[in-house]
Amino acid sequence: MELYRSHVLVCGGTGCSSSGSAKLIERFEDQLKEKGLDKEVKVVRTGCFGLCEAGPVVIVYPEGTFYSRVKVEDVDEIVSEHLLKGRKVQHLVYVDHKTHESSVQKSLSEIGFYKQQERVALRNCGVIDPENIDEYIAFDGYRALAKALTEMTPEQVIQEVLDSGLRGRGGAGFPTGKKWQFARASKAEHKYFVCNADEGDPGAFMDRSLLEGDPHAILEAMAIGGYAIGADEGWIYVRAEYPIAVKRLEKAIEQAHEYGLLGKNIFGTDFSFDIHIRLGAGAFVCGEETALMASIEGKRGEPRPKPPFPAVKGLFESPTNINNVETLGNIAQIILKGADWFKSIGIPTSTGTKVFALGGKINNTGLVEVPMGVKLRTIIEDIGGGIPNGKKFKAVQTGGPSGGCIPASLLDISVDYDSLTSVGAMMGSGGMIVMDEDNCMVDIARFFLDFTVDESCGKCTPCRIGTRRMLEILERITQGKGEEGDIEKLETLAENIKSSALCGLGQTAPNPVLSTIKFFRDEYEAHIKEKRCPAHHCQALLNYEITDACRGCTACARKCPVNAISGTVKQKHVIDTQKCIKCGNCMATCKFGAIIKK
Image (cartoon, rainbow, N blue to C red; front, top):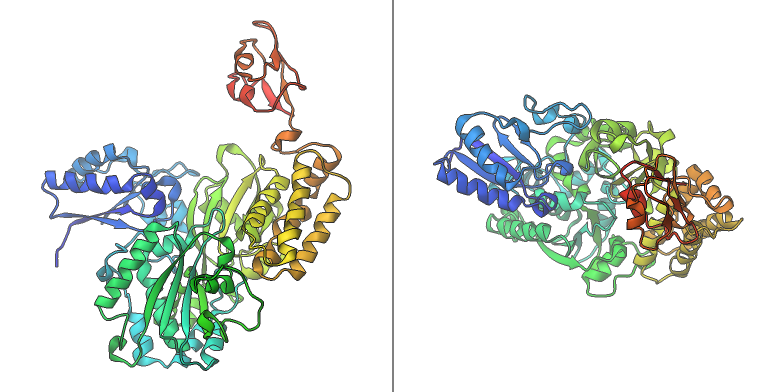
């Protein structure tokens, strides 16, 4: 075994990879060899560290020094100063957005972004090399599978998951143990265990990061689940748009076979289990379990009515259990540490942790994992670092296109399944898009509904036609053509669609509209009655005006593509609103802040 005095961990997730982390690794390896340090220092390509805003991220252990936004040209200095001379490179060390404190003297857990997180599903992401099974095993990998197969009956495994209170992390939060129990009770020659990695919510990347950073955790959980329900075959349905995740899954499956952890007679028992990968083509509706199974079978990805439920008649007409990636990320730890340990995290009705993809108008964009029941304020202000540019927090959209918008007045709400549902939002898969005062909530509702209209499979009339009619009304409102009664029409259509659509996509599609009407009705009324967008966002309702701060420099007039601005040098200029196409060039050009939106 090779021993190293230092390890340089470089984020190899999609976000940092797109920012050039692969070139950083190459440069580190070249420089270490050149300085004769290649036998003392090891460079490790890991998964996502979570703090995507600071990427590419490099962490040097054993010190735990957190370097952010590292460029290729910075590598030489890190090697020559830190790794050769033992002096940390101060100007590259991460600085907290909120406190403006350098992390140079802090461990990772002391940094504001990480301080109030608790990593269970993401425990290995950013810690191990996801393409090295030995590193996974060194962090208790496959011990839970060994325990389940050699010390527990399938019924005992299911009971442990039931007792833990683990609920599905991909949608409505159905108890995972009950799902397994139903599949176990079905009698059939073959059963299947499916991992739903079809992550389609805008701004969501929880499952992708877990697959990229800890693929063996998912394989182990699937094998445990297969043993519990009596399945001998597993399928991972993953988006083709996730090439890094797919590559690492393929490698992990190959390694697990080599070690005898997949295949025939695992751990010398009678249990045999194999896993296949099926690539999805990016249809959002295939996140619905019956549509997903149809796609695996090579059919058009359309939902079917239930019952029969997948636990009775699923993939290839055999009993099937389906869980999403994050749900499975908790299984091995529950089996190893026990249900009581898992229940000690979170609250009684929502146990454990939840991973969120934090994005939008927030300083610390990235991946966070927090105990259930944490206040929304903690996520936004403490972990997220607050809103950039001194703007005010307005709302957060949770649960993706199927979720709802939570206003600033509910910033102290508990983040758990029941509390979010009670205000018209939902946990969903874990997307969390933050909005500030410049966001128009009517346009936000239009954006998410436009997404679901585009992604509807078209099989049922309420979703195919109803959501399109709602979108047409929202488009009229944002274009200044709203009419009295439009809000009531939206509410009626929404309730009809929710009660009659075939699958979860259609049933939840109206949620963003209903929640924004509930909490931001005044914005809808301003658009309709006053032909005004309070957030100054909807282009058709905007007017640009030149104030007395104008110096008459003529820059705006020269940039106007339709010659709508007139005036003489050193005199206040005027905008002809009849000619103005509201492109915003004038406002972007003015150096004196003399042009405002009204």
